[in-house]
Length: 480
Ligand SMILES: Cc1ncc(COP(=O)(O)O)c(C=O)c1O
Image (cartoon, rainbow, N blue to C red; front, side):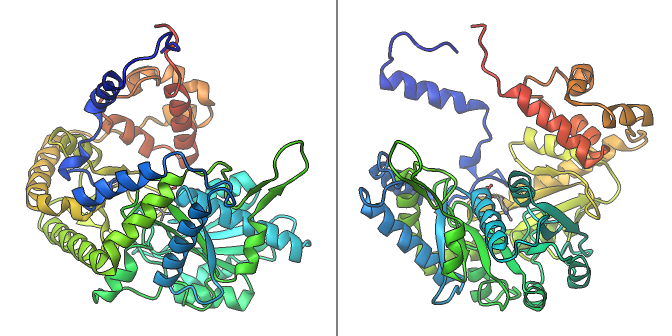
């Protein structure tokens, strides 16, 4: 697109924006099992209204916008209360789980630089199920990520985690729960390890912070996971997931408020205004914090209990149905609403495309370590009214996909092709055009063949190919 010469009227632009959504997943109907956290029409209207009230405000400067400061203090106070942070706890409102995790690792690194300057190659110890945001933080902040295998339920195993601690370890990581399988790590035992070795311990509650407290209160069997667990020093939780806030809303919490000083960037060595940023960004839109504050107060504890109950019931229905579907099985304990299901005897990837053709979105996940390739479902209250139809389609589609594979040799990537890709750089995309259905600069229609191929490559090669795919995809069309 070229830069427009003349402006256009709002109505035309808004209808163009609406039209552009036509190829997006149809989340409004409750048929999407990832990315969407929807607490209903009134809640969404409140988000829009609160967000637009603070559309232009800038939380960068609390002296000019004290109301943004007050909103953030309220939101952090509510979060600390929910996860039992204690009297000395504090935190920062961030743009998302990734920013919360980035800040946690940067803060920990800088704290250790100060108190343990002898540690020159700091390591962060995490289970293989830890979210990629931890690896991103390690990459950004020059930390070494050390991963440890998990058990058959995809939970961290305390013994091997402890055995992997070295003189360079600065931080332990556990998830409550992990995104992929909804597995809750043994936070109590990991906390004891952290205490024994005097390490800091981050519990990643990005997806669980606004869910597990209520599931526990409802009587579901949820192990201890929050800041009341001895040894837990910091915790990330997202409001824009099961808190139903507008996207761009998470927080990082610390048990000890003094450590947060290592998080804050403060710069007066230039010609302009003093830049003091608690988070990664400087300008801080007022919309996300205002919408977050409004939704937490609108839904309240009673409302969240009902929403979690609804998501739990919908999830239990899916788990029960999958047990009865030939060829499918649940992975891990499947205790909450973050589920993963795998195929027992067929290639599962075509299932996602076939379900998509019926209007459902389920999320393919590649095999890695002890986790076979599978389909992820994040089940929310917005899906609840569709569960019967969903499981009926899942049963039918599974039978069709399985039948279509009967007698067909499963695709196995030829060793030469695999070696060729493994030993190539990003330019290999030029030669994979036919296999991928294009040169990588446009979105593919069907994903099943691509996923099947990627699943048979080492994770490093998947990263390389997908990274290059994104690099080619996000380019402006300058020819028009
Ligand atoms: C457990 C966990 N941690 C971190 C993140 C990253 O959050 P975000 O996508 O908001 O950056 C996610 C996202 O799903 C998550 O599930």
